[in-house]
Amino acid sequence: MKLARAWFTLLMLSFQRLLWSASTLMVLVPLVACALFLVYERYDLGSHDQGTFEETFDDFSTDFMIVVFTLFVIPVCALAYATTSIGGDREDRTLLFLLVRPIPRWLILLAKLMATLPLVLGIVVASFFVFCRLAGPVGREAFVLYLPPVFYMTLAYVCLFHLFAVTFRHSTIVALIYALFMEYFLGNMPGIVKRIAVSFYGRSMMYDLGARHGLSAPDPTWFVPVSAQTAVEALACLSIGGVLLALWIFSVREYRDLT
Amino acid sequence: MWLTFEHVTKFYGPVIGVNDITCRIGPGITGLLGANGAGKSTLMKLASGQLRPNGGEVRIGDHRAWSAAAKASIGFSPDINTFYEEMTGREFVTSMARLSGYPLREARERAELALAEVGMVDRGDRRIGGCSHGMRQRIKLAQSLVHDPPILLLDEPMTGIDPGGRRDLSRLLVALAERGKTILVSSHLLVEVEQLTDSMLMIARGRIVASGTLAEVRGLIDDQPFAVRIVARPVRRLAAQLAELPEVLSLDLQDDVLTVRTLMPARFYAALGELALADEFEVERFETLDVGADAVFNYLQQDVG
Image 1 (cartoon, rainbow over the protein chains, first blue to last red):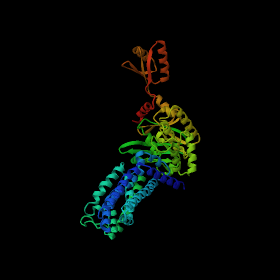
Image 2 (tube, rainbow over the protein chains, first blue to last red; image 1 turned 90 degrees about the vertical axis):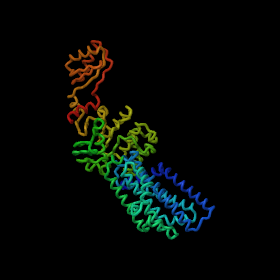
Image 3 (spheres, each protein chain N blue to C red; image 1 turned 30 degrees about the horizontal axis):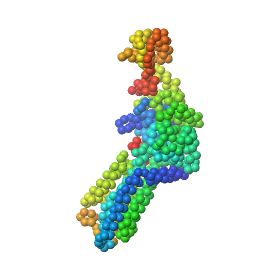
Image 4 (tube, each protein chain N blue to C red; image 1 turned 180 degrees about the horizontal axis):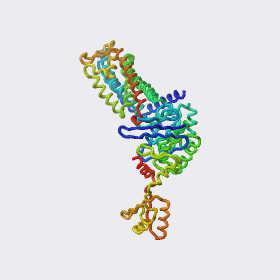
């Protein structure tokens, strides 16, 4: 009972500290920029010929959902909180006060993860909802269709960046390089190399789910998507594997390695 | 409850932090003395389960120090000076109590008690970011006391505290020791530890070079020559007269500064005083070179090296 209370306290403490951290301000900037972009696009499109529903859906999926939301918004939101949740305590050296409390180390990291996950999912899903509303009828349809890939990608990124946070001393920089460069390059590599990128599976899900509204698949010589089911399994495995590895690393590493 | 080190060795890569340390620390206050880099902090980190030994074992009661179970029995006040800066002292100590598993109401009560013990009740609502160094030290101590652990590990707890605060803190630690707590206090200043306890461990180059009561440790030190630097006029005549004294082991005169070595400092001081009065030497400056713990460690290290 005592351990459960201590763990829940740590979860709540971590959640509050993340919510009121500079990360919130940091993610608000790209989110507001995206919202303004969508408002502009809708207003601008309204003054021209918008084309059929399928054409507009294809444009929204390709130009916004894949390029902006999948490759930029989700990873940025995830890294802003996931690397700060344990990395912030490492950098501030307050982690010590947690490590000398009677909570097993793996439970400390699990509390951090459990505090981060609802926050990031909440922000990503809420912003996704707002963006879709701003995009009009196409967005309303896209929200229902693309919610699963958004959820699984967010989950995978949060877990992966927690692994980065316990592995690397400057995890925010590593995660930033990974999210903004490695994911982009890996995801656009020919052959099966792209299958190690989180975004590949998210995009595959979107192409698979969006096909019913005429979302055109990319050139097969360049991008061969996997099925939505395979993508879900891959992202779930990546999330669970990443978390288990992070918990193990955090349990065995000494404090001097973590500061 | 006992804190036990059994043949404990810790490496930092190729550098040795502590080397084959074996000791048992029981109820009462034990001073851990050592120069910077001697291995005090490594020993503290091993005891608080932040580090794992490469060899041997550190135990808190029956539990390995690394385990979560051992953490329930220790209160650790680290030498770092960082906190959750946005919190008040009261919120921080309450949070630490809750992280030890206490429900909110009990955590608040315990935090009040701990803050009262360190004299921070009236200043507990100040944001930690705006607290002085001394207040931060007290908050650190309060968070280590809040769950009433049987073992307290205090890494340089006196640093930054004013003389009045030191006196209060010394009284508190003595009172806690009288309640049966095992308290390990690290310091690089002999004088700080002297005020607290007569039981000490001296560490140098990662090894315990002396342990026991203050008298026993001083006995080891008294076998070593004691250096005194004197600036006086006329210095050459003073040097000649001091050379006659049986207490003086050697004399060194450089740039009108006289360095005297003696094995009997008390008798030497008395003799110097008499000479200065009788022959009207003008003593401008007089300083003992070997009173700090560093000098003691230098002496004791000779045995280790």
